[in-house]
Amino acid sequence: MRKALRGILSLAVLIGTVGATGASAGAATAAGPAPLGTAASDRGTSTDIKDRILAIPGMRLVEEKPYAGYRYFVLEYTQPVDHRRPWKGTFQQRLTVLHKDTSRPTVFYTGGYNVSTNPSRSEPTRIVDGNQVSLEYRFFTPSRPSPADWSKLDIWQAASDQHRIFTALKRIYSENWITTGGSKGGMTATYYERFYPRDMDGVVAYVAPNDVVNREDSAYDRFFARVGTKECRDKLSGVQRQALIRRGPLEEMYEQYARENGYTFRTTGSLDRAYEAVVMDYVWAFWQYSLLADCDRLPADATKATDEEIWKSVDAISGFSAYTDQGLERYTPYYYQAGTQLGSPDIEQPWLGDLSRYGYQPPRNFVPRSIPMRFRPQAMRDVDTWVRHHARNMLYVYGENDPWGAERFRLGAGARDSYVFTVPGGNHGSNVAGLVPSENATATAAILRWAGVAPAAVQQDESKAKPLAKFDARLDNKDLTTDHRLGVRRP
Image (cartoon, rainbow, N blue to C red; front, side, top):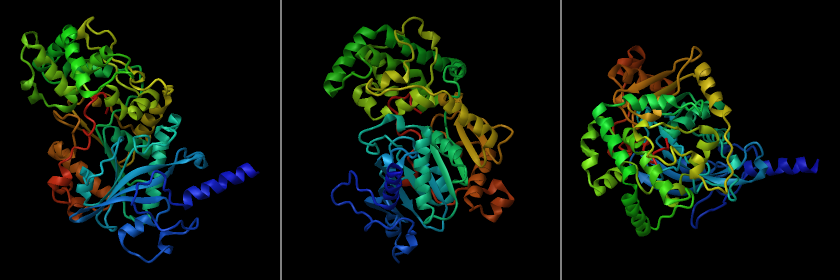
């Protein structure tokens, strides 16, 4: 009985107090904890948006940055390490709010990695001319519990982080909400909808991979056999082959590069393993981030290229820092998830023959051995089945030439008002703006409709649909799907 009572009291403390764990000097916090169950409107009469946000128990201001037409806040929010056992400890999760007006819809953006602390606007936010809440994924520093219990890094716990933040902010931002994200962020938006389907009014997921059966990756092999043109594929495979044929002299260059930059290779186990991992990513990386026109910049005949030319091409596309300890450290949470729930691609690359020593290395090779990992194959099967049969107000956008789209989300007979569109020739930065005009109009009209702000003209004729906010070069130029380019076998 006393044990149960302690759990209830601990839960009350979590919900009813403002966490200050890890607070930096001078950061503002809400003034004192409110009694459990006290509504924000009952705790003061201020109408200033900052005061209203900070009246949320557990919310803490890190910084406010000025931006014309908006208020922009960098915040921390107290979250339970384990949403099933919230009395077992908390951590501070970083988020940002780009505030326009509480009368506008709100877009919940998830990148799936770290959150940017500079103002930016996702495509749906511009389309609906709304507010934007952006969330850092749990276990990406500084949003990591200490000590870190890695078993609490899974897609349900992360979805529950979002649900709890949405529940807290919905009192302030009461209009429609749409969740969005690119790449791993698109996966994150999908998982949130699967576990909390009543929260959002719509989902816009960009270039979201869907590895349903981790051991079956032939779709990627078929993709690489036909993507782009034969001329471009031959150039890429030529450089990749030469990088492995000339392993000796190029690894000497790698050793010098590592010494000059202080790079080490404890996680992969050796410089040789890290070198090959970079080279094996070369073809994938090109199609993920480049366009067919970029083939003109590749060495025309790799056999005649100098060692320096091969090095520069591989480094520019794959990045030789990617599989160093320092390059991997930031992305440990991703590789952990890839090796426990998300799955990861494994491609044949037959053009390499027997030049590869290790093959396409699994995520386990990129996570410190001190962190235990066990793969749970049911997680992605469950999500895929749910999307096929229960998708409602969900939009998926893929790029024709993006390898991550080889295994994608698909809709079944149970889907309602949902779409899967592909940008012709598009890469991993594909978005609604890149769709053919008819699909662009359909997608834009759907986003406006789900957000509850579709003009009468659009409701009558979706071809008239267009973003409600003007383009802003500072807010809108950022490609939110390519924040994590180096170490390209990451969505």
